[in-house]
Each structure stands twice: as structure tokens, then as C-alpha cells.
Image 1 (cartoon, rainbow, N blue to C red):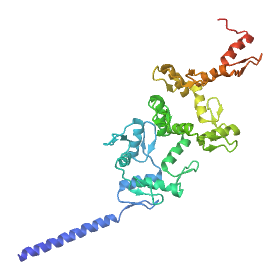
Image 2 (image 1 turned 180 degrees about the vertical axis):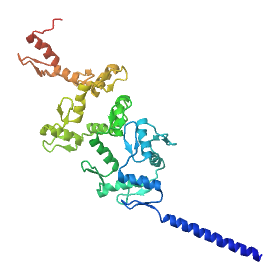
Image 3 (image 1 turned 90 degrees about the vertical axis):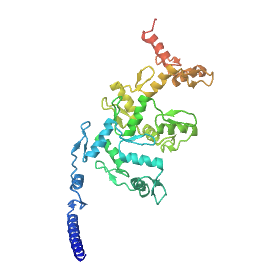
Image 4 (image 1 turned 60 degrees about the horizontal axis):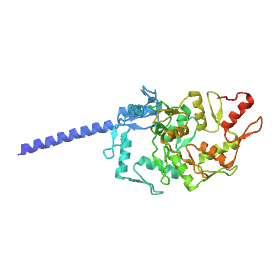
Length: 371
């Protein structure tokens, strides 16, 4: 028994020495981390250290073979490629919605479980993720830590800076798989696709009218409420949207900041420029899903569809007659009012409609239609 006790004590001492030796080795290993001599940050693994160094060098060895964009990490390239392929491998098993990134799925799942563990100590609002709370705090502090190195403009969120930079680079990574038009933001592509699908997910609860964009619904609601909260400080005219005030002011200033790079013509609004460019390109992005006919402008498609539906939404408040287009109703009303706004500059005769004036002028030019 005594010999057995001596053997066990010897074993314990040996194991204790081995543990001390291993612990010494571990401590020794911990004393040799990977130090970044630029920012002083330390890493326990060479792989993580190598990735970190790319943040200082700007090295981006992983390239997208579709659009050429480069990335510092392979997993970022993998996520980026899904923009082109449309792949959404992360599925919600509650509602079947799919996502490009695992983090987006995690964030979405919190919407089902309503877990909001991060509270703002200033206003009490709760958030699913710590990062969301951090971004929210910028509202209270006014902090804008993300700066554009091209124009020095600052932003509260990194995603806003990324979007902004595309103004300088001209990058448009989101492409429509139906017509090929590209966009700088995914939200713009989603809105654009509704031109092709006819989808109008935003409905007015007062009159039932539907819209493809939420901003259009907001603007439409002012018809019911009469709200025009934005004022022109030059003529005091009121508007339902701030962007309308900006465009309106150009009437006073004569500013036309949007230029056609084909013919040089200038316009006061971006919408007018885009519409004008279709004269050069021949583009007709608005398609009738009934007969396939295409149009350069959305209102032309709206008017055309009434040929198929027979809809006549414009009513004369004098005789009750209905029309498919507002311009036809305007012309019709002149029968009642006697207004003749189209004048012949040769003999002074006046007409209700521009077409009547055109036909009349042939008498003077000698091109009278004899048919």
C-alpha cells in the first residue's frame, strides 16, 4: 500500500510539472501575438492579421468578373456576386422570405419574435441590433462620422456614404434584368421594375387609388387633406412637397442645372431631362401588358390603356359627358364656355382647338386639304 502511495505521488508531481510546462508554453504563445505597427492592434492568428493589414494598404485582391468591382475579403465578393445573380440563400422558415446575407435574416427574424434588447436611454426607442442603436444615437448627437474623400460631405451612416460616393464614381451596380437599365441604389431598381410589372403596392385608404412609390401616395394624400406645408419664399406659393418648391424656384432664378450630353439642351428638372433623352435614344420603357405597345412616357401608357378598359374618368360638370383624357375634356368645355384660345396670326380668326387652327391655316398657305 505504501509503495502504491509513493507511485501515485510521483505521478501527481509528473502531471503537475507537465501542466506547468504546458501552461508555460501557452503563456509563452500568448506573449507572441501579431501586432500591427500602423495602428497598434493585436491579433492571435496570422490569418486575421493578414486581413486586417488590407484595411491600411487598401489592397483588394478579390475581383468580381461581372462588373470588375474589387474587395479586400473573399466573403464580401461572394455576397456582392448575389447582386448580379439574385441568389438569396438565407430563408426565413416562418414566412419564407429570402435574403442575400445571414445578418439580414437574423435581423428579419427579430421582427417575428419582437426581440428588441437595445434601448436608447434618451428617447426609449428599442432596437434589434446594437449597430442599429449606435446609428440611431447619431440623431440625438448630430454626429456624422463618415466623410466623403471626394467632396468632404459627411454622413451619419456608412451606407449613406456608400450611396453618395456613386454620384462621383457613376457606379450603377443594380441592373434591371428585363430592360438592362442600371441604377445606383437597389431601391431605385425595385421601384423601376414596377414599370414592367405594373405593381402598385401603395394604396390610398380614402379613395382606393394605388401607386408604385410611397412618395407618390404621400403626395396624393394632400389632394384629400389640402395640405401644402412647403412655401416659396419669393412668391409665397405653397406646395405639398419640398422638392416641388426647389423645382418651382427655378422659374424665378431661370436655373436649368440638368444638361443633355447629346444636344446640350438644358432643363430645370431631372425628370424633364430623362424624358427629353428618349427623343435621342428612342427608348420606350412603358409597355402595355394587353397589346404590347410601348410608350416613351408613363402618362401616354395610362391614356392608352383606357382604349382597352373603356374607362372615362374625366366628366364634364355642365353636361355630364365623360372622356378618357383630361385634354379632351378641356377642349370639350370650350363648347360650353365659347373660349377660343387658338388665334390665326394672319387673319386673326380664333378657334376652340389647335387642330382647327392648323386646318384653317392651309387656306392661307394654299395647302388646303381637298379630300
